[in-house]
Length: 134
Image 1 (cartoon, rainbow, N blue to C red):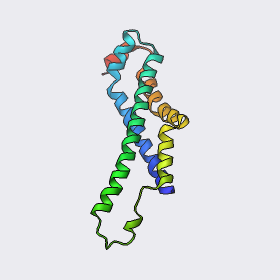
Image 2 (tube, one colour):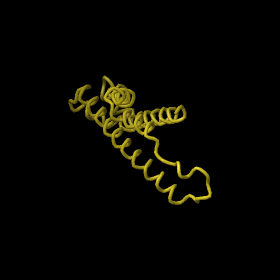
Image 3 (tube, helix red, strand yellow):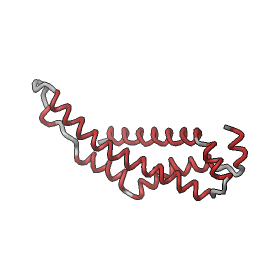
Image 4 (cartoon, one colour):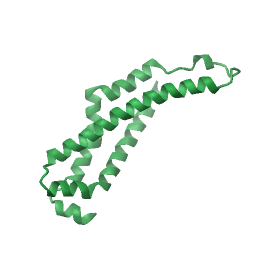
């Protein structure tokens, strides 16, 4: 159970890093939005909605891959390997993963780590500066 939690933590950190990297790539686009009159809250809502959608879709894909991987392993593994009959998706781990994606509190935390930090960096007070930087 501890190894699964550590793996989930590493995956969340990886996703946050990818979101921040993507924000660096989108600095020019977000600078144009701010220059055209989009307020900081509008850009923040855009980035938070994107982060939420990515987390829900990623969680759904993860559940499908877990069941598909377990089924493929059982189909391809030789019967001489001891314990193959016990291979299954652990309901407790799946419940934690689904709760992490679906629970408003933890989804809010991941959005704040990913989306909010991206919006802080991307919504500079002077849009011209972000356009000149990129």
